[in-house]
Length: 294
Ligand code: NAD
Image (cartoon, rainbow, N blue to C red; front, side, top):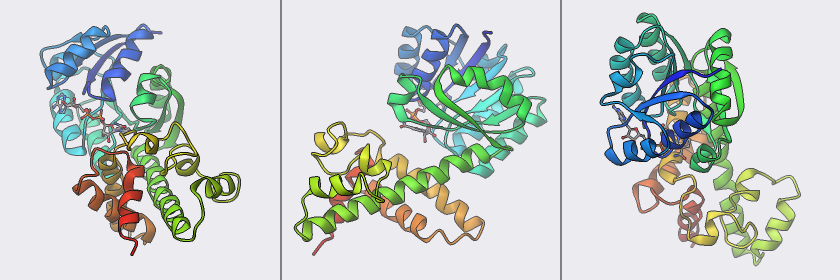
């Protein structure tokens, strides 16, 4: 079954996601503030509207892929007034309380709403292999699932509104902490005279095994596809990791959860992203951890 979809935010992630919806046969009308993003999406078969409001005017589903919670709430204030009885699905990574505020805006205007952040990055958006973490009512999830499946490989219903965002920040807290743990282990191994390959050969098949080690290894050599082999181009940019860990640290603070390593990882990535690390792959944090070694 195909749908009329309004898609607002056609950036690095939203552009290829909208293109995959077109490929699946949906009628996608989109908008972005940036002309290049609009032109790129138009080249992929997305109909471009003159405004976000116009993009969603007759949409059955309204998808958003925007930078932050502030952008999502701003756009929702406008779009919830223009759409008619639509299912709003926000795929951006934002705070749980912003996701619930966005849901309230949608519901008050007579719409349904889901939070559906993603994991998998730009390659996953291009290859339609994203993982969607979805929060909201079961019947709304059932309605959105086939549409999300056209952009992803796995679509998980996490629970009520906001739990998709909760899953996203908890997952990325694991990732941020584990990348620092892996990087610290390589730096310690260097000081102890242990080669990168030997540590990898042991840890990748022992209890230290994790995605940060086996897929995104922070040192060149053991994993040829990891950004470390090419000077750390992002991949998953450190600025985005800093953003996600900041959301996790804020949530930990708000709910009085100690999450000591999560908060420390948030500080380390925030420092790294303030310096020259922002646009580099997050695994490049090993370079500052190494510099701090006496
Ligand atoms: P991006 O900056 O490339 O794209 C966001 C787009 O939103 C931009 O093109 C911008 O012009 C547009 N936009 C902002 N305000 C708008 C408005 N009022 N109307 C219309 N368009 C507007 O960012 P991205 O990398 O695509 O990330 C989007 C979201 O996905 C973020 O929340 C990010 O944290 C999350 N995310 C990103 C990745 C990744 O690897 N890039 C991975 C997972 C999740």
